[in-house]
Image (tube, rainbow, N blue to C red; front, side, top):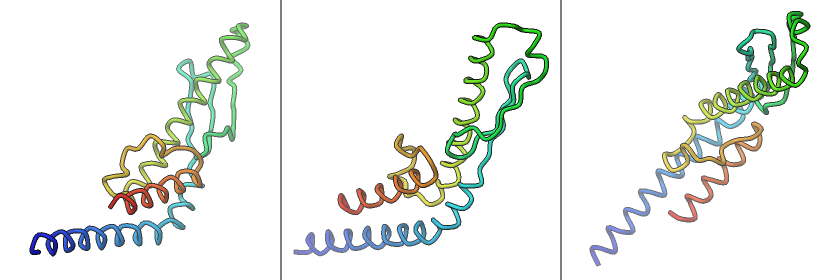
Length: 137
């Protein structure tokens, strides 16, 4: 009987903790979403001939090619350089989004690989993660 009361109290305590985390996270979602949508990351290629800017969703917002590219007529190499520079910027944008969301996350959600995508997808993943925790809790 005492063990049952302890278990119920432990579950109740855990539920209260999770409820508080969910409330803090959801009340912060609007301001975090605004911050996520304003993320822009600039990357410059190793040869400094390509500069890209991507948004939080990893989509290209700006591409600048230095005139020096015309001294290297290899279009395949240029294309590869552009793609790699965009990839670097997109990875940095994803990392920045996750960093902004980390304070909202309980330990169970930190570092989950599905926390990626657009700002909306990221927040949807977090919300789904909270729901998973509550179901398991």
